Amino acid sequence: MNDHRLGTRNPYAGSGSTRSPKYSQEIQSQQRLDRLRAANVERTRVTRNHDIIRQWAERRGARPATMPGSEYDGQLRVLRFDFPGYGGAVLRPVDWDDWFATFDAKHMHFRYQDRRADGTPSNFNRLERPSPEDR
Image 1: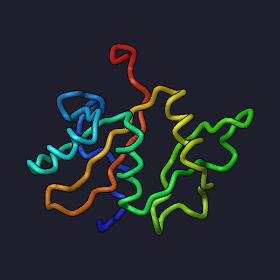
Image 2: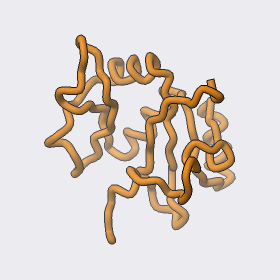
Image 3: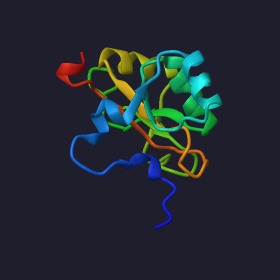
Image 4: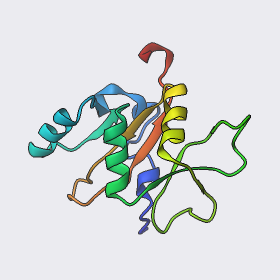
């Protein structure tokens, strides 16, 4: 199956593995990310850093978005990225400030990959709320 939306699926099999710290690497600063890229270390990462998230999305041409009708009392409820060629007809664009305000209010984490094992860019990403033991 040649699905360019691979970024929306779990790259690891097994229950609970997407939240397991052993399969991801927390990135808190751009400097740390740059060092990992220079060392060619590729794995699933997790961050709350707005600059890293925005740069990751913009390098892929993705824009912040939400699902129409998912807002409640003027607040965004569902956060998405609108990648070129996918979902734009069903997603509503939002500005980065609103997207990050919701991201922060929900204490979300951004789990992502920069590249696949073959070196091509990966669109894999998942927005997650931390489990109680991670807070």
